[in-house]
Length: 305
Ligand SMILES: Nc1nc2c(ncn2[C@@H]2O[C@H](COP(=O)(O)OP(=O)(O)O)[C@@H](O)[C@H]2O)c(=O)[nH]1
Ligand SMILES: [Mg+2]
Ligand SMILES: [Zn+2]
Image (cartoon, rainbow, N blue to C red; front, side, top):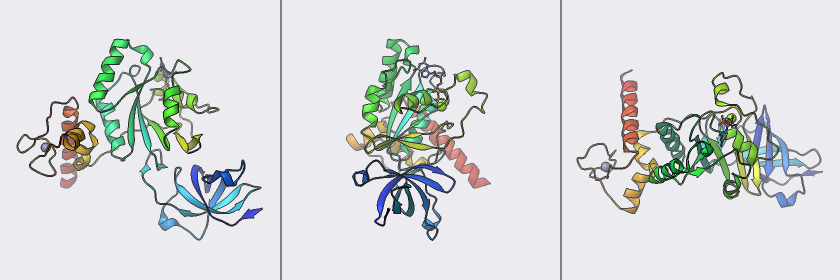
């Protein structure tokens, strides 16, 4: 049987010219909510590629073979690169508290690059079995002063992720991002039943070549909630436009939005004291300043080329 009406769907996987698309109006099709789709030839979506996470309209639905044709691409909210995934709603920046040791400047860069995408950003800290409770509380305080309520996990305990899972089920599309060896795969294997990605001890990671070549894929956690699986990717922070930087620090936003501070110049980068009213006595100010200075140097170097 063929259905001619159009339905909205979500691209959950992509390979060669094929896409797996989950139907959004699931109640219309019993048990047949995932379709193998090609893109209609006459359409090139203004040369835009279609990515996992994109919302599309499908047509020519064949219920028996579960095939359909993608006829249009809906406007996307954002696009992450490496891994390429569209319409992410939540980024969980993931680091281990030890092995590898927590690098605060690196945590800062990951948080800022996630904030630059305009999504909800959270911080997950794994391997908390490797530190004392006292150290854990110190870290909790530290990140709370950065504007984040850190989620601590000991992934050696099989029930450690229950609260996190309940939270993820409330979010539209979540992704874990962070350096190699922090436990992202371990966590995903726990969260997504049936997923068996390879984990590797930190020392083996250095050797490379261990990465699987499977593509990025969305897994459904509940009716309207997905999680991105990105085997083989260890995401690096992106470069961010310096004029946007002040908005990406919750500590700075708090002063400006909640406390109503105003600087003399509208686009104040809060570097000098003249005309700047920002209270700079917060922990990340030194990281902030360094980031601005290094991107300025980068900018001027490019200008001279
Ligand atoms: N002690 C401890 N080890 C962990 C924890 N989470 C992950 N690991 C180990 O850390 C190593 C790297 O984990 P993996 O999931 O491959 O990290 P990924 O590179 O971020 O995907 C593996 O040997 C895991 O068993 C944890 O909470 N505590
Ligand atoms: Mg991994
Ligand atoms: Zn200022």
